[in-house]
Length: 482
Image 1 (cartoon, one colour):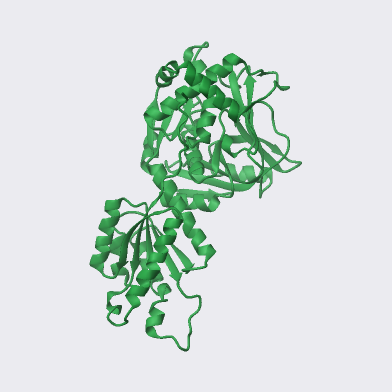
Image 2 (cartoon, rainbow, N blue to C red; image 1 turned 60 degrees about the vertical axis):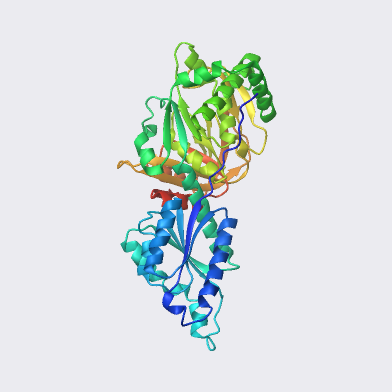
């Protein structure tokens, strides 16, 4: 049977939570501590509802308690620390909870009451609402201690803006946990001469926490050879249920999808499933030329359909050995936005859009119609021939994410939000979509290229800039918005 496997999802983030207060207040104001602990339980319940796995250190009110909270967060290997400011606390009893953990901190300045009764307020009631009092002090301590932190201010309840921002931080932390534990396969080599795509594997391990598994074409060949007739037949059924077959188009390299080509694509897809399962991969970047029709050339030519199926179920596959774009695709996928392997095709100066797409696999789950399989007599710029995938990303808001590398060796994100608009596209066996950005095509290209990008991006649905910026912040990487 087909080894299709489950759809890969983002791992839930582990959120270390501690509230803060001042122990001196408890004997002075009866019931204050219990009230603040109730507020903290509300915060923790909301974080769980947002998808986080909460590790609670309770209400921290002394420096030793803060040390104990830090020990707990280290043991539990949290991804993000949430400091809920319940009332005033000195920064010296807050810093120890985060200093040794070396994780980003989200400071929640959430007031329980929208407005205080200024003329009749008691000191105890004020202290139950004075979360803003020590947030600047804590921010100063964190900044001087080189601890990465962000503050979210607002109301504890009925505040969609504040809780929307907090939800994005939880989602970004989930992407961080997924990326830190990901295994990305590198099959073959980078397309020769594409200098922008050459990658230092150690750089990816160091800056992303991802593991890069170097694979040989022999690894794939062995698994394709082991595919049974029953598995190949089941995979063909799956392919025909997902795709429709395109008739040969006007392009002279277009050709019918032959039974032989379909059988080979199905067998290679089964081999890819085995490869992903055996090496526990969550992403794959690949390219191999082969020579004179040898088995490796045939394998390289048969990857498109199987890799499109993998990409759609959360194992992003980037062609031409572009590891950095595989990372972009992974991030977009774990944000629930898809993430299709894409490059710039052409500028339209009449309707003011940019046509973007690529030959090879795409994230077919973000198309608004059934994708097509088109037979090609050759793959332009590459060896071999066979079946390619053709589709457009559904109309509506989109985001492109590029991962590039600076001269200093740092990874860097480039982000732009726009819209996928309907209209005719190429019928040449490529993914391609009409994308309109806030800037016109010429201005957009000038500004994008000024940032030293790679020539590929991940194309996803929805506007994801704010979430991507938070992922970059958690990773400590630069993020430029065009």
